[in-house]
Image (cartoon, rainbow, N blue to C red; front, side, top):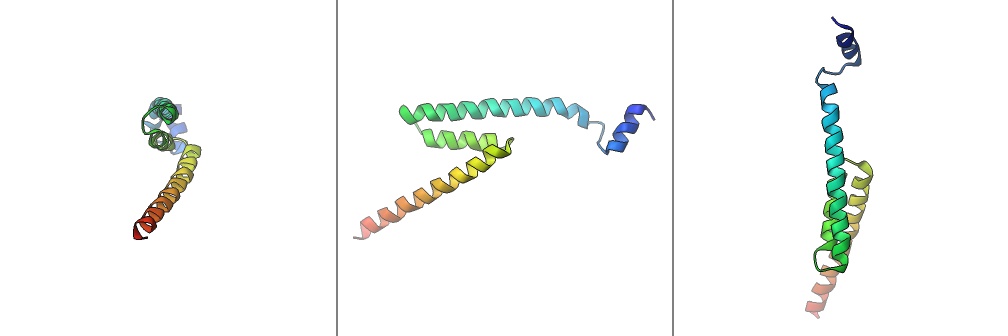
Length: 98
């Protein structure tokens, strides 16, 4: 057994684990860039025509696949959006009934 194999055996990691490191970094960077672009596009669409809030939430959802902080923010904002949508639906139903 070589020294490298011994150190990997002690660490308990498979030999392929070292090869996945660069791919993980590339994926994290790509997700970060794509998510930030979606959020930026959503902010622009708040002023221009387009589904700005949906794009912002989608960008946060995408970032949430790799970054725990974005996941927490996304869940919190989705909760606020669902509550607001429920209030709008309830008020619309009451308006029709009256």
